[in-house]
Image (cartoon, rainbow, N blue to C red):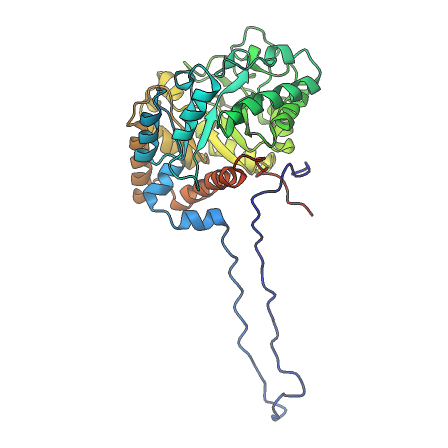
Length: 400
């Protein structure tokens, strides 16, 4: 990362012991031998690096526990007991709060978010779409929304998202799916009122400012990678597509995502949209777009799908099975799969069972699931470690 550390990560120092490579006796104790004799010694084995807490935790999990840890579920209720039972029975690693989960005031919401935690040592990732403006789950959020911030100095975006993040954290929520890094000048686009800039440079400055504003309060999420602005259409009802080339994307729509990543965003949400010159598949199901995010943009945090129910809502028959969608999304490189639309109380459990079956059959590599589970549990451990204090940056370069 090019940015300075935002906050010290949950400290884990992996120490490698020095290895003696010659291991010959000193001249004072070397036994006498004929000139042709040689003295040899078996080289000492290289030490095995110590596992991080997240790696150790995942190593101790059963296959089903690993599968459950990478699922973010949802049920539409404000019944705290029902929510607790849902998290306990499914073992899901996260929960997305939608409008149907939000009561009338912050105190009541705190009761709901507390009920989502089954094990305080491994709290779930509780997320919300708190963009401000048109997409605002917290009705008491009066900070400027994206449409207003498009015309303001980037410092206004930083202040607005700092205030917004404080409200989110006070409610007991650790992840905000709130920073739209898409960019479009098209006022007719469904995403236009939600973007932070009409040009790549303007959006980049405000996206970075929004990430800075959220730091320490919530984990920041950039969405909807690789960018809705270039792909006309609404991914809630279709699979928008564009013929934009990879080089064209690098010069424009990539820039706000790069800015947010460089500033330390911890999560990257992949959209259900296709850049057909790069991959005909939606980015959420594309191994190539995950490679680009990791290798070209340097993102090292948690990748998460947009709601997989939106794929079903596209009406395309190949995306009719939510379990198959989840397995394909994990295989492509997502660390967490999100299910909201069309979900029932047993949807998360069916997806978890499907992930287990896919690993057992070899359709989903076991090490891909392990890698995803480690990244997710790192964030969950960071939430537990922070308690009521500042959340650490989990994607920042360690301090020198």
